Amino acid sequence: MKKKYLLISMLAAFVLSPLAHADDKSLLSSSLAKEKSDDFSLNLGGRIQADYATYFNNPIEGSAGAKLRRARIFTSGNIAREWGFKFQYEFTDTAAAGFKDAYFTYLGLPNSTVTLGQSKTFFSMDQLNSSNDNVMMERPLLEALDAYGDRRMGLKLTTHGDNWMLGLGGFMNALDEKQVTSYSGIVRSGTNKNTALSTKTSNTNQSGIYTISGRATYVPVHSEGSDLYFGANLNYTGFGEQNKAALYATRPETSVASTKLLEAYVSNPSSQFQYTLETAAVAGPFSIEGAYVGANVSRRNGLPTASFNGYYVQASYILTGQSRNFKPKIGEFHYLKDIGPGGAWEVALRYDRLNMNDAKAGIYGGRGSNITAGINWYANEHVRLMLDYSHAHIGDIPTSAPAGASYVNSPLYNTDLNILQLRGQFLF
Image (cartoon, one colour):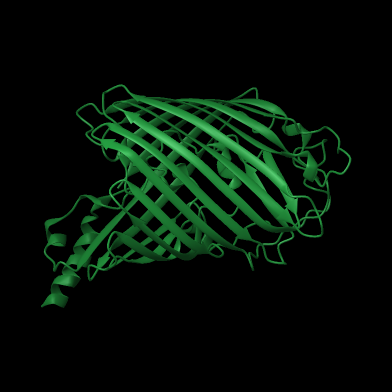
């Protein structure tokens, strides 16, 4: 009889599609799915994010474009109380590149979770937040320093109290294993934006790469509409002998654009150390957050260490009076709660910078800054419209290769760019 109810619960969950999003808890569950023993639950959900962008005074990207930023479906749940799982697929990618979350968890330890499979590493709060929940359409420029992607195969342990969290994980390659890891040559051509490094080569094998990732958070203040948060993340990555270079690259905070204007190759990497210091505060409808990231890449063959850094500061105000939904046990923001009739309105402003120049290491990827103003309308728990206007500046890329340079980005990417973009987001 129990097997019969288990089968009925599974079928009902898929047919009736219990609605879920960032924290994978059902917003609406069918009564049939609740007719089960206490050792089984199942959710099915997903997201669609459609982006439209217009570029001003931009000789590189053209004038406008549109794309599906994300189109995902997931299933998650629990079995026998102590075991959980999540499987998420991204349809805007292809084949193995579409696998996002793909893991199972052990929940039998007090206030702790053991996760095995492909999941997020600990890089920053903004990276750990679901894209469904972040205030701006795109994450800040400093995410470029998370060179090997936010999700990788590994094993991690997290434990928490009411106002703190500790996490430690070991990770190998991602399921798609798509990462440019080798190149030869020094400079890009300054005559044509489509001209790559003169003798550039590619390698999609992440063989030998591993990362040890850690996170600690503390929330000394947490009450209804009031939060104060501090967090730190540490990542150590070792590179295999087959990886002849590490690549760091990003667009100017628009996914519709195809060109990564800030880009740096670091040849002969042996290891990489990254650290993130971050904080956030919520006071009623007002919130502010910020982070600083530093990355140091040690190199083989006596080459000097390459160092990059970035930071951002962001503030938001919810005009309809709600407070951002902060989760102190995990140190993350989730989707807005208490959305009344007519929806909720939010305005936001962010400034961020990224430095990928290191003259001592002979690497000139450029320096970038971005200021973005946004307005969001939360129609309900499932629909949000976002409008962002950004001014991006890319500079300090030399027009000719300095003495001792090992990599110089294209000087054509020294530019200013104004971007107006709109997103329609639907969660189910």
